[in-house]
Length: 262
Length: 214
Image (cartoon, rainbow over all chains, first blue to last red):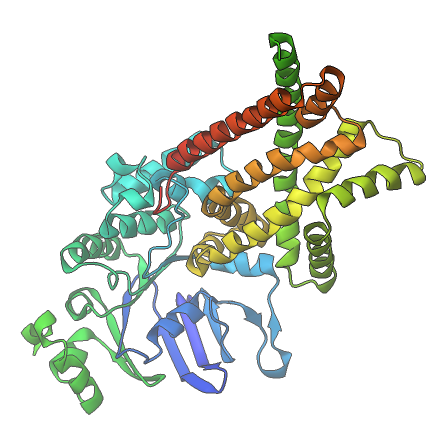
């Protein structure tokens, strides 16, 4: 049996004395789209950041394709991975942030090819050819020479997706990728993400776009107050919400397309 | 005041420009290392940077130059006055530039460093390719300002025996008994150089890509 893309076991996370994630266990299957939804402060972004080890779990473990991420061993035998080992396991993960986080001093092509050149050591021409192919994939080949400040938010986020894809990840994590965008720019980013899902990329998406979750996700996870209340297919989650907390949450998003499923 | 005298001043101003330009660039390189040490988690590195910066910011440049000029020979090191002047000015400007840069480094959004981390950059690669270029752009106006200050402060290096613009003016004033036109000319040359530096600085700032102000 092959390992799942991501296996999270009894994960808890504290910020100081505040418990933001409580005893979360979840398996993200390969080739599927998993959406994390829930109200603000429910811990969904923190959970996603734990999957990239941008936040350290206080306890519990995370495996990426069967390999431990961030720590090896559990309990008192838990030990931090060396930076090199962490980088190797993280290499399977591409991350897309809410604020895009493009490097402002590099062009779109520079952003997409920087790690290929500086980290992977590819010659400039080859790195740029690969970068260009990724920019083409997100429809921004013509904007290759533009700096982030010269691009719209939606274009910046597509460059950020291309930058992550250029490193050939097997898993893509999206942290509220459209939350910083005007509604009319949201569509172009979701279109790119849909195409990626159709290719069979393993994706974990923190989102408030209930319509996207309903139509693209294989699994929807609902978090509230740091707990994973449940996870199921979107049909089951949205068609007949069993939990009053989910029902209340969805009511606030009715105008965003979830009502068609009810 | 003859053309010949003015020409001598102009020639000496080349030394002023050379000493200042080399010091600014060497100081910048030292400042990058210093501010990295200053921000480091290692107490020894941080302590060294703190002491270095407070010494070179806290002691007058004239005193620093005299110290270096007298200290090195007593250690058995004899350097030409140009080298002594360059060391003094570079170390002094490095301390100021390090503090400017630290502001820039701390202004780099954490998300930009996280995205470098996720792209596989090591800490050193991220520092070199991501943080430093962004910090340099953010603090570029302060760098131009520092260049102007150093151009003027370079008049002090005459105390280590280097003949630059101010020293030449002093020599000419003493030998020709025409201090007023000679010092006025020297002042105008300093002013002209700095106007050009400020102009080029603004041009370069506009040409720097990728920051909201650019």
